[in-house]
Length: 178
Image (cartoon, rainbow, N blue to C red; front, side, top):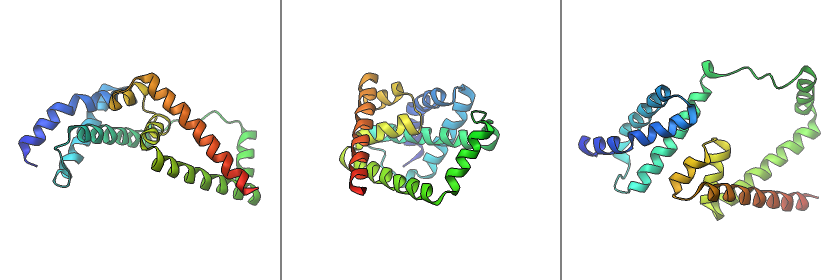
């Protein structure tokens, strides 16, 4: 990719990346910094990417921006004190971590969740992607709807249907265990 093509992509998608980041982090200044990081990384790997597909470029920039926002919230100076738990609740959490039976059950449930999510990704990649973006990356449904060219209601319905599907699949696995 030559510099002129990269400049065209940068100019076309810069504001898109900033808007995405701003919706997630809530600060235009931080969003601009994140946008710069996204495009710097994109420039570094530009030789390995095919930029002829505009939809793919937009999706790549959207995903990279979301990931950079996630990294921003992981920075140590950004962490906040968690005051939701009282002392007695900390004790119950630590009991759960030291009880071997509870640990085995938790590990088994984690394995089931992983298998169900892998099955979802294989069978319905769009719903999987929408669920991950809205629930795990906490990207607003309006923005996910804009990325896929669907309505916000459609995004919310897909998330609800996907959650129901996951619950049913988990129940099937739990019944097989017994």
